Image (tube, rainbow, N blue to C red; front, side, top):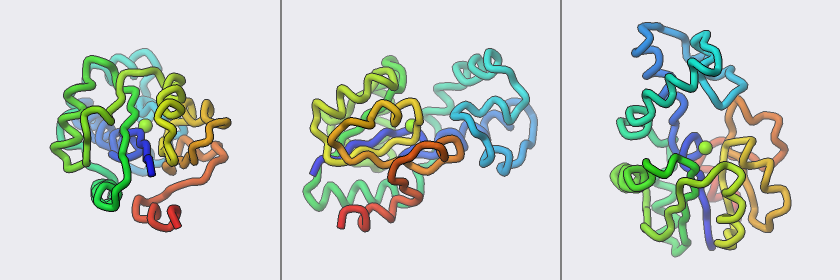
Length: 186
Ligand SMILES: [Mg+2]
């Protein structure tokens, strides 16, 4: 079968990694509970920042957020490795900016994710992911972001949402842990 995955906050814990970096850069010590209660994909509210300042901060730290030691979610790497061993095809579909695509692909390999270069799709807008998902005729697709998921109502692919505080309103089958994938496939 063909499996498609978003990367950030679906396979890796990027926002929380960024949250720790923000605390360090801003010399603050905002508690992780605040992070877990955020209702937005963006994290700047936790630091009392307005949208504009928040966006500027995110962009200024982007390379550090992307390419340092952001952890994968528990079981994510092992689960995808097992899919590959079992003969499934694995695709990545990320809307990270174009200029970071190659580095992202190599970073994912370095973490231990099974990545084939031609199965790595990157640099599209959130609402453009649907075209790739349809073209690839994926059996399964996993993402966390409401702006993406809301475009996928009519696809034949089985879409799953990675559970996050900001996507509770999205009505789709939900994944809480990567270890649950085995059950889904049964
Ligand atoms: Mg994401």
